[in-house]
Amino acid sequence: MVTVAAEVLLAGPAASATALALTAPISFWGGVDPKTGLVADPRHPEHGQLVTGKILLVPETVGSSSAAAILLELVHGNRAPAAIVLHEPDAILLLGLIVAKEMGYVTPIALRLDRNRYAALHGREIRVSKSGLLTADLE
Image (cartoon, rainbow, N blue to C red):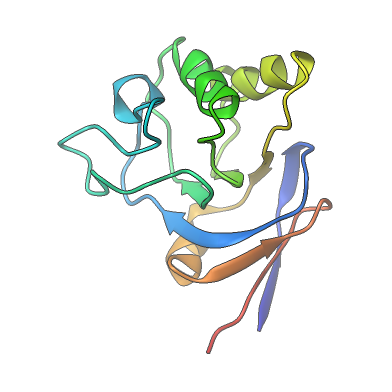
């Protein structure tokens, strides 16, 4: 078992889910379909992968002010990741979670963790605590 401490960027509920570590930057606007929760960008290495209910590890975002709206739509439609782990905080993306929280929706916890840790977590069942501890079995 391995436990890694991440920085909590935006509080949310504890979560347990499979980790999906993206291997390339993503734009939520055009990159994630808010109606299906799938990575929609055909050029993205994880095209067709479902982000819904996953511990989504994002190495980098590609800016668009509409990313907040896409994440808000994912939350509203119950298609959001169980947790979002960013290498660096993205104010626009986090704004979508803040707005969703203000509207009364349960929002996923958002964390910051160095992307060099992502590959070891990909595909594993991860437990995320409210305090930002990520725990994975390494069997």
